[in-house]
Length: 137
Ligand code: SF4
Ligand code: SF4
Image 1 (cartoon, rainbow, N blue to C red):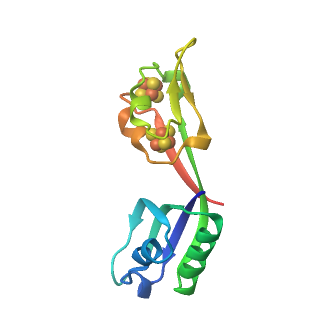
Image 2: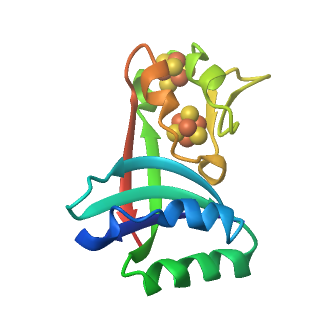
């Protein structure tokens, strides 16, 4: 399973290799989507954790034990359908196949369940029709 999480690091945790430990010891795959971390300051990280349910629970418990607050997050990608010219540029960029265009209508379709909030479509669209919002749940 994949879970999208926001990690909030206290000052004394930003210089410890917690993410490295999660990958090495707890066997969790981590895809970092956004990071604001500097040694000696509080930090935050938006990331996808991939493992079985138990592995993700153990990873969250490990982070909590080290003072890191973990919150699930939902991301919402949307685009301006009215202005879309169905050029397909965003479809080529979307490797998770959340975006598609096909017969018979040849109009852009978006499957939010497949979206991993990678933001590649934001740059790919020549008309800049995409926007993304993150919200803790
Ligand atoms: S954010 Fe990434 S996964 Fe989601 S629609 Fe855009 S390109 Fe596809
Ligand atoms: S790149 Fe923009 S204009 Fe082209 S299909 Fe995607 S959303 Fe529509």
